[in-house]
Image (cartoon, rainbow, N blue to C red; front, top):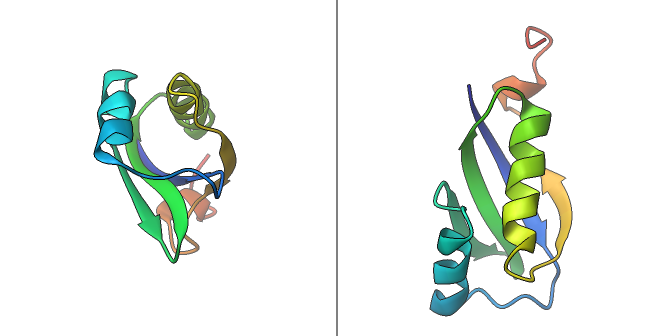
Length: 86
């Protein structure tokens, strides 16, 4: 399955081209780094066996670059949050 979620990074993280390259090299080729309302984040579309596995692997890949993840965010209208998901 493919899971969509955002990793919110520590506020002091500056999203630069260099950081984007490091993230890509660390295995985040399925993530799009950017800033939303001044908050650095990475939007992931990660393939995995479970949501937990997708999030854990994405956090581990981001941490390889020295970035700190503050939290995970899933959009309120995401099908991942529907009662039909097991």
